[in-house]
Image (cartoon, rainbow, N blue to C red):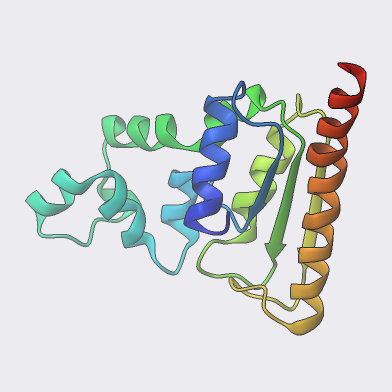
Length: 164
C-alpha cells in the first residue's frame, strides 16, 4: 500500500506477523509523532488519532499542544513501535521529494525492521508523494513484481512442490 495504505501495511506486518508473508510499502506513515512535526498535513495525524481532543479544542493542534498521554497514544499506534517484530520480507519505496509523508517515515521503519527475512529500499530523488514520473513509476512496479515473485510466488510454488 501507499501513503495511508502504506501505514496500514506497516501496521499489519508489525502487529500480525503470522498473517503476512511479504510486504510492499510506498511512502508509508510509520511514526505519528515525527509525522506531526514534519508533514505538510499535520492535521491528518490529529484528526485520525486524537479526534476527541481536536474537537474539544476547536482544531489546529500542533505538537506543542500535546501532553504526555497524547504522545503515548501516538507512539503506541505508530507502526514503528512494532517494527522489531516484522519478519515478512519488506520492500519500501520512497519519493525523496515527498512533503506529504516525508521520506524519514519510511527510512525509520526500514532501519527498525531488523528481524525481517529480507528488506529492500527503493528511493526516487526527484519524485514526490505520487512517485509518478514515468521512469520511477515503471521502476517501482517492476521491483514490486519481482519482490512478490521472489518472496511470495516462488515460496508458494516451492512449498507446493515439497508437499507433493
